[in-house]
Length: 63
Image (cartoon, rainbow, N blue to C red; front, side, top):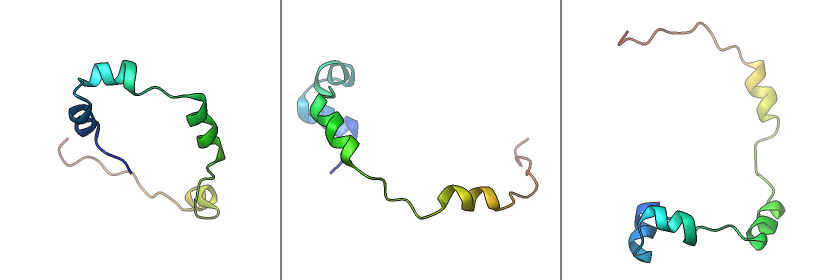
C-alpha cells in the first residue's frame, strides 16, 4: 500500500526534509526484498515500441 508523502509526513509529525533524512532509510533487508521482485511486463514491450512508426512530429499549438 502506498500513500502520498505529505500524508505520511503528517502521520509521523515530521516535515518532509526530516522524514527524508531519518525515516525514509533503505535497509539491506529492503534491498534484498526488492531484488527478489520480478517485473511483470507484457512480452516484447521494447520490440513493439521500436517496430511502430512514430509519424511526423507535431508542433505545440501554443507556439
